[in-house]
Image (cartoon, rainbow, N blue to C red):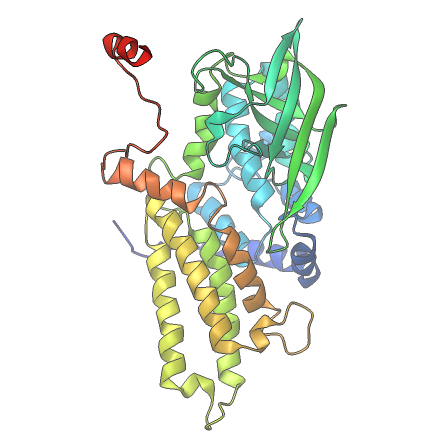
Length: 407
């Protein structure tokens, strides 16, 4: 593994400066404040501004609505967007879903949507989880029933982040309940403005908005189907694998840890706490920044951050969440009472960065699949441990045993 610095050319340095100037003008303090109060994880003015530059699809050719950037320039853009605290969730889900639409979608659907994905006027959200399904998305029961040349949808999805600011949902449905659950599913790209669709907000502890989306007799044409009927599990694995960090970064330019996005919130809170330490006097005299106990506690958080961002694969997902949950709690304990003051309150640390980071941290154990699911992935697929036999697991008996059991 090469941790060496990538030396930028003068042209790349100029591009980085252009990106920073554009983002400074576009992602204003008001945009960031609105993000915390709305919980949308999305800003339409910023999204459309990036689309106008081709920066939503930066590696696409210019004639297809992209910016024609090379891999290093695209990584510069990604890095500067993160540093500017770009509300990125909807852009990310749109990118994941488009890769599936491009691979499995009807040609006419692809032609209609591609330029609008590039300019930002079409966004996609993920319709995986159901109210009683938990992290087992293969247990989907939302029914898609054939009706002539189309389909009728009945059911509900939950935790559908971005549904209220998206135009389409990437929907996993049950089309054949009579076959094993992984074989009876089909995926669709469903317009969210159709009759029979209801979107209800769900608010998290961190003031983030997700949604419950209901489908009551929603009719769609077959050209919105992605992949073959009954092959939905294979289709949905594209976005899932990317979300779970399956595959290799052959260029070595991307973040090593998929938990990196969580840790950025901890880093923002840590920076605010350091500023607090530089200006705060302790009861026994001297500044907090000069106190060895304070420095030791802050140093432990820095070590946790570095370990989390240097941990690959599903382990990085767990490490990122664990570091963020523990680190923000430690900052609250260290800097209280100012740390419990929210954005816009006098004497709040930073712009309420510690308080927000602490509330945000609790959701990181759930986003993109729970920490428990990732620990199972580590156990089975990384460590090669056997799967446990749990009470209630279905037992498959030989014919003779089954007959005797029925006696």
